[in-house]
Image 1 (tube, helix red, strand yellow):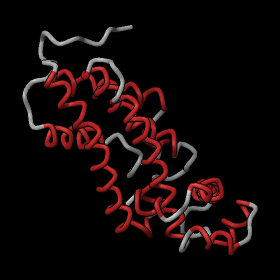
Image 2: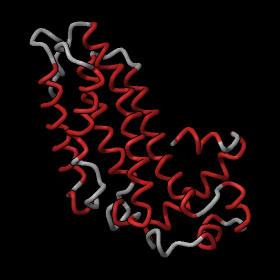
Image 3: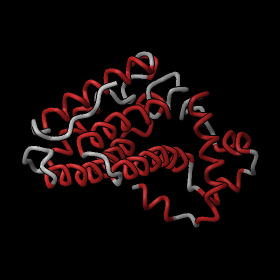
Image 4: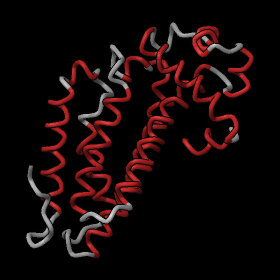
Length: 214
């Protein structure tokens, strides 16, 4: 869980933790999880091996924390959109596009899919992924409820609809396929944008504010 691993470190630890997580990111792209060692992490981060263990219990903990950090940063950006004064339909569309493209950009330098890079961590990764999706859904729910309250959206159960929106865009995430296999960034963004437009249009009442084209 993101908050649990984050709360294990004080704010003064964050710069050093980030240095280690940045090093892990580079090594995962270079070697993958199996070949990467704590010694490699320490050398890449320019610190002693013992310092790695001051901040993380194991190589596994480092890598799962790295994935958590990506999602934590995504959630922060989703929350910024959710709190803006734009129409709910516009916010929801932007959030759906962002949840895909933020992940795409975060692992674009990997030569293999996340599932392949972290195949040895698959059980824990899947458990954490469910938690990540639930956190994203919580942010979407706020926008969905706001849209209903303002008369922009059809009546629906916000929690169920958030899960549907998450599931409908999950197929575009760089999990089972690498970013190279998914295609060029602009093509992926165009596809996810069209998907988001379709999903949001299905929710939006005819008289609700529409996104301006161009």
